[in-house]
Amino acid sequence: PVQDDSHFLTVCRYVEANAVRAGLARRAEQWMWGGLYARARRGKPFALADWPVDRPRNWTAAVNEALDAEIIERLRTSVNRGRPWGQEQWIQHTAKRLGLTFTLRNPGRPRKPTKKGRNE
Picture (cartoon, rainbow, N blue to C red):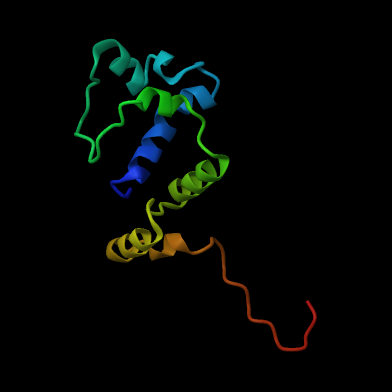
C-alpha cells in the first residue's frame, strides 16, 4: 500500500527511472518500455487507472532527477518487506488495518534478554 500524496509520486519516480538506474537509458523518456516514453510521444500513455494525485507539470524533469540514496534504500526496504509506504502515522494505521504489523519489525528472531551483570 502507498499513501496517495507525495509518497505516491516518489514511488512513481522510482519506477519510471529504473531504466536510467540500470544503465539502459540516459533519460527515462528514452526507454521504449517505460511510461514516460509513451507520454513523450503520444501525450498520454495507456493507464489502468487514474493517478490519485495530479502529476506535476515538470514530471519528466523530476523523474530524471536522481532520488536521494536514503529514500531509495527506505523504499526498497518497504517493497522487500511488504511494508506500507507513506508518513509514519499512516504506515502504522494501514499496517494495523491490513494485518501487516509484522512488516514493521526487523526481520529475524528477537534477541534473548540478557541477564544483568553477564558479559556477552
